[in-house]
Picture 1 (cartoon, one colour):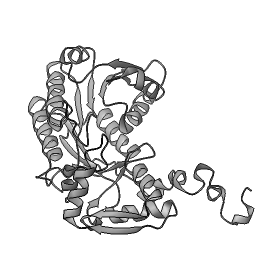
Picture 2 (picture 1 turned 45 degrees about the vertical axis):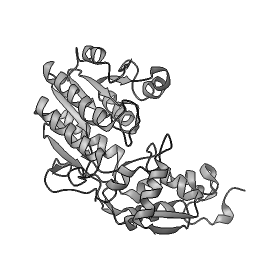
Picture 3 (picture 1 turned 120 degrees about the vertical axis):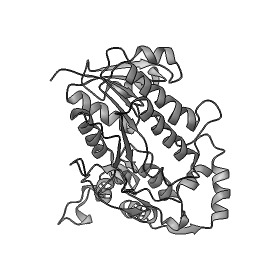
Amino acid sequence: MKEKNCLIFGGSGQIGRHLIRKLTKNNYRVTVVTRNIHQKSYIIKTQGNAGYINIVEASIFDQHKIKELFENTNICINLVGILYEKKNINTFENIHSIFPSYLAKLSKDNNLEQFIHLSALGINEAVDSKYAKSKLDGEKNILKNYPSATILRPSIVYSVDDNFTTNLMSLTSILPIFPLYYSGNTKFMPIHCTDLIEIIFHVISKNIDSNIIECVGPETLTFKEIIKKLLKNINKKRLLIPLPLPIAVLSSKFFQIFPKPLLTEDQLRLLKYDNILSGRYKNNSDLGIPSLKFFDEEVKKYSYMWKEGGQFSTERYITKGNSKNNSLK
C-alpha cells in the first residue's frame, strides 16, 4: 500500500495520541499541529515509529500557515474540541463551527481523499446548550464545504488517559459525599478510546464516507451507575445525593469562575439529555465494528491508582486462591 499522509489537528489529546500510534503502526505518516511544540512534542513524538511523525507549531487561527499544511496531504482529521469557553477567542463558535468549516473547505480545495471530523453524541436533542449548537453548526458547515466528509459522534470516551473517569475517581476518593445532577439518571453509552480508534482507522483504511456515524460502547449506563462502578473499583463508599436544580445551577455558576471549571452552566444543561444512540444515523455496529470493551472491566485495569495504597496496593498483587496474609509485607 502506498504511504498516505494524515494531517491531524488536536493530536496531543487522549484520542489523538491513541490514533497516532495506530496510524504510524500501519505505515501512515502523520503531521500533527500543536499550539506549543515545546510543551507537546515529547508527548507526540513518543507515540509512533521514528520518522513517521512530523510536528508543526501553529495556531488554529493562523489561516496562512494552516493553508500551507494541506500541500502533500491525503487525509485531514480534526479532533479539536473544548468543553468550556474562555473569554478570548476560544469560544464554542470559533472552535466547533468556524475552524472545522475552514478545514473542510481547504480539504475540498486541495482534493483531499478524506476529511474526518470528531463531533459529539446527543447534540440534536440538547437544544438549549451552546456547546451542542456549535457542534451542530460545525457539522452543517463541514458537509456544505466537503459533502463526503465523515463525522463521528462518540458518547463519553474513556481510558487511563481521559479526563472523565480519572477526574471522577480523584473526586470520589476524597469527597465524603458526591452530588448527582438530575438525580444521576442521564444515560450514556461510554466507549473505550481504543475502540473509537478502531472505528476511525476503519473509516480511513476502508475509505468510508458515511457522513454521520454514532460511536458507542456495548452498554447503556446512567451517570449514577457510572459513579457506583467507579466507587466499587476504588473500594470506596460515598453518599450520593441528588442535588435540587436551583442548587445545581448555583453550584455551576460558582464552579465556572475557575480557570478549569468542574462544571459550567452549559454543561449542566447538557446533562439533562441522554447521550445514547438516536436511531437516526448509522452507528459503529452497522459498520461491522462493534465496541466490545465493557466499562467496569476496563476501568478495573487502572483504578488501582485511586485505591488505598495506590499503585502498590497489596490487593493488586493478590491472585485467586491467595489470602491477604500471603501478600507482601
